Structures are given as structure tokens and as C-alpha cells.
Amino acid sequence: MMKGALLVLALMVTRELMFQTSEAEACPIFYGVFGTVSIGSKTLLNATLDLVAATDEEKAALGKIQDCYNEAGLDGKFLDLLLMVSINLSTDCIKHSVSSVVNSIL
Image 1 (cartoon, rainbow, N blue to C red):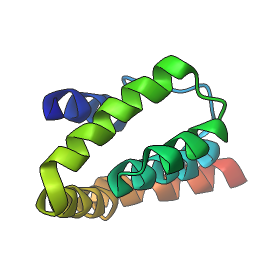
Image 2: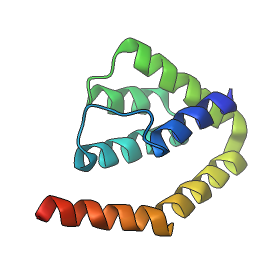
Image 3: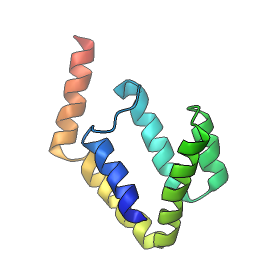
Image 4: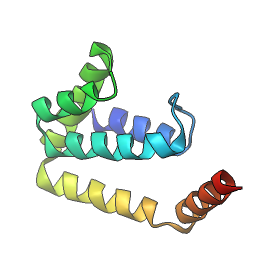
């Protein structure tokens, strides 16, 4: 099951899976959903997904990803947190963020 979650994350990171929102809107949504998935509460996850009008199918799919996180335990959640931090603090990610801000200003 964790392979499916990693595939979705990889597609999102490589921009092969795109949402119909701007980057400024998508980042807080992504981190909010990622945070609630990793916390492990279905109620909190559904409440977060209600904020973005997620369908029942999307809720079910993210619920399955959340089940993978819960099965991985605290060690797995900690390793995913380290992965997210390393991605977000990478040179490429920082360059992209800065260029996005500059382009939106110009």
C-alpha cells in the first residue's frame, strides 16, 4: 500500500499530477492534507478535505494512504517528515519557489 502513496507523492512532486489551482493555493492545501494524513485521524482528514470540496472517491483514496501511514507507525511518519523537509529545503525547490515569486511580481 505504501508504494501507491509514494507514487502519488512522486507524481505530485514531478508535476505529472496537476490540480486545477495556482501554486499559491495548492501549497497550503497540500501541506494541510499531508499533515492531517500523517496525524492519522479520519475525522480530521475528512474535515480538511471538506474545505477543498473533495469528492467521496478522493476522501476514500486519501483515507487509504492514511491507513498506510498508520500501519507504518511513528518511525514511518518520522521518516516521511524528514523526506518532506529534505525536499522542501533542497536547492531545486528553493530556486523554484523564488522564481515563482519573482515571476508573479513581474
